[in-house]
Each structure stands twice: as structure tokens, then as C-alpha cells.
Length: 351
Image (cartoon, rainbow, N blue to C red):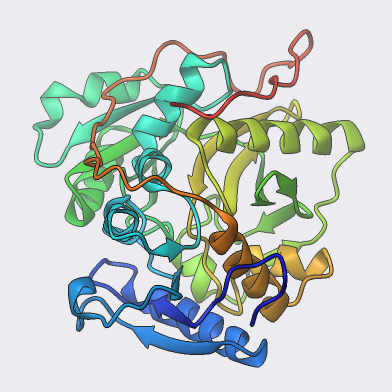
């Protein structure tokens, strides 16, 4: 699968499965990717790192690695760092961008520093006594969304209001990771923006039977509906897209990504998180957005492989750093008039 502009590609190694709480979704994503690449003419091998360690794979110089891993290790920069250190080509973002996006509090701190809108939050260490953080959580005002700081697929996510619910939600989310994010709930609409590099694909509005788009709503509920393209006024849609692009660029995100936002009653977008390895299942939002833009799944996967080959990554042997931010700075009130505000300017990738 070569042409004059693309270096030779031998096999595509699809990494799927892994040991995170998102293993089942990763296997479904990886299988969908493998089948799509095979239909596009690639020689594909599927590898589950939970069963075959990366250093036990018979890597070849012309291999390309398609990352379909979700959750810890697959999205937090460690696999990306290993591949980069060994001079291997892979899809998606680099180690540092993956780390920033995976740890929601780190991403939110960067956005807040740059003036991008994200709901106020605090980060709680798993097992930390409620008396040390509950007052701060209540001061966020109204219901809060509680979720693990470093998980995807909305695993462990709950909407909570009042002392008892918040304490129970934090205890629940603590089962899935060492830290829990508590952020103010934004009433309004759920919007997701899929980005192919710096190219925005059609926006999707998610209509769920519940107030939040949790794991059940994403992968099991027949009541969840997707509106594609999202029925938004042009100015609001442009604001959402500019905010999503700025958020991804601030983190240094590459390749295919998905930016999740809430749109408050005043029409202002609020950043929730960036997914650097979006799901690729039949119910996943990124492939649906690509299809709406005229890209079939085989075409999308082919493009991602070719972009991975074209990217030059340094073999710096650097260590991926993990850090969390415990508390958000003061943030504008959610739901108030957005008059007088401007769409965020395009930003340089974080260094």
C-alpha cells in the first residue's frame, strides 16, 4: 500500500485490548479498524498487549502501529513513548499530548490558563477523607459531574447533588483510578467535535435519556440519539469548532481526536475533555462524523495510517511525566449571558 509520496508500509500492527477498564471497547474498536484496513488492502496483524508484550513483537522497519487501545497505558503516553523510543511509526498524538489529554485535570488547567472555557473543578485523591474536599466540591455550586481523572468511555461517571450523593460518587469513581475529577455540571446540550488533524468534521449532538452521556448511554442504551450534523446556529457552530480546535491545539494533539463539550443555555461552549484515541466501534462518534464528511471507515483508517508514516517524531527517550492539578482557578458563571465574550484565538501547541 504505497505511492510516490508515502514511504513503504509493510504491515499495520493494530494494538487492541490491553488491561484497562476499557478493554472490551478497545477490542471492538481494534477489530473494526483491522477489518477496515484489510478491506483497504493492507496486511494487518492484531496484537493484544495484555497477552503479548510490546518488546515480544517481531517489529520490522516498515511496520506502522495503529493504536486502538483505550484507557490507561494505551492513551496516557506510555505506549506512545515506547514506540517513539524504538523508532516505530504510530497513529495519533505523541506522548506528552496523550498524557495531557488523558489526565483531565491537567488539560483543564492548561485551558484555564489560556482563557478557554471549562467548568470549575477540583481533583480528589482516591481515599482522601471527605472532610478534606467536600466543602470545596459543594462550593462549585449546583449538581456536579464526578468521574475518574484518567479514564475514558465515561467509565465511573455519575451526576451528583448534595453531600451524600457527591461522597458516594467520589467513592465509586475512586475504584477506577488514583484520582477523581469533580466539576460543575453545565446544563444544556451535549456536543462533540471530531477533528482530523486541524480539519473539523461535522458536529454531533448527543441526546441521551439521562442528563449525562455515561457508559450505558454510549454503548448499550437504545434511547441515545445522535443528531448529525448538530442543528446549531452558524455562529454558535463556528464558536464550538473554534473552541474545539483551540483546545486540541493547546494540548498538542495530532491525528484523529474528539473534543467533548457542553453548550449552555446562553449558547456558550464549555470544554469537558479531549479523547486522543476515539472509539472506532459501530456506535462510536468519530467514525459517524467521518462518514457524514464522506469518509468511509476504510478511507478514514487509510488516511490515519498514511499520516502516521508522514509524521517525523524525535527519538528523545524522554520520560512521560504524570501530574494532576488539584483545584481550578475561578471561572465565569455557567449559563449566564455570553455577550461581550469572543471566540478563543487559535493557539500554538503547548510545549
